[in-house]
Length: 360
Image 1: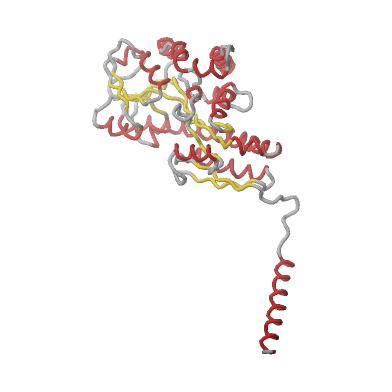
Image 2 (image 1 turned 90 degrees about the vertical axis):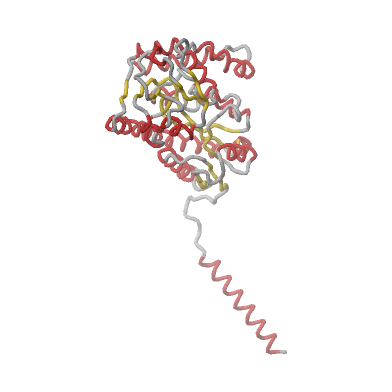
C-alpha cells in the first residue's frame, strides 16, 4: 500500500517536472510577430493558373501585412464546392472569402461588372475597377453590399472577340446567316442581337462547356470568346476566323463576407487592400502577358485573326445601340440604389473619360 502511494507521488513529481520542462523550452513568438487572430478559407471553383497564383500571392501578402494576425488557406478548383455553393457559403459566413463572378441570379446589380462596349483594354480596366475610386469598383461594391459581401479587388480575363468557322467578321453584315452561340448573360445577348440585326444570324443558347463539341459538329458556326479560352479550353481548334473586337470585358471579383469585414480593426482592413493592390497589379501584368503569348500561338496554329481599326470597331459599337441596352438592363437597378442621380449617365461619362485618357 505504501509502495503504491510512493509510486503515485514519484509519478506525479515526474509529470510535473516534464510539464515544467516543456513550458520552459517552448519558443516565444518572434519579436514583433502577433498571434493569429483569424484563420480563414478562400474558395474558388476555377482552375486558371494565372488567377490562382495571384490569389495565392494575395493570401500570403495578407498574412505579411497583418503581421501574422490573418492566415488564409486558398482552396481552388472546386475543392469547396461549385461557384454558386461557394457564393452562398461566404454569404452565410461558413467560408470567409471567395472569387466570384457576379451573375445577376446571385448579385442583382452584377450586370454592371461587364456591360459590353464599356471597357475594352487592360489599360482602361486597371483604372475603372481600381478601389476605392474606380467607377466600376464603386458601383460593384454597392452591388455586392446588397447581398452581404465586401468587394476587395477584381481579376481580369481580358477582352471578348468574335470567332467563327465560316468567314472573317469585318463588318456587322458579315454576321449574315451565321448560327451563333450565346449564354444567358442578357447584356451580351442584347448587344449581339443588335449588332447582327437584319443579317439573318440566329442565336442559340448553350452552356460554355458544350461550345467545343457544338462548333466541332456544326451545331453552331461561331461564338464570343477570350484569348485564354481559345487556348486553354481549345476553342481555337474548332474555329477558322477570329475578330479581336473587344466588345466586352471579362472580370471576376475577390470579395468577402461583409459582416466579418465590418468587424475588423482598421489596420487589418488596410492590410486587405494593400495586399490587394499588389496582387491585382501582378494579375493584370501576367494575364496581359499570357494573352500576347496566346495570340502568337493561335496565329502559328493557323487561326486567321483580324484586328479592326478604331473606326471599324465603332461601326459595331454604334449598331449595338448600347443606350437602349443600358435602359433595359441597368437603369432599374441604378434608379433603385441611386435615385434621381442619373447614375447610368454618370458611369458612361466616366468610362468615356478613361477611354480618352488612355488613348492619349
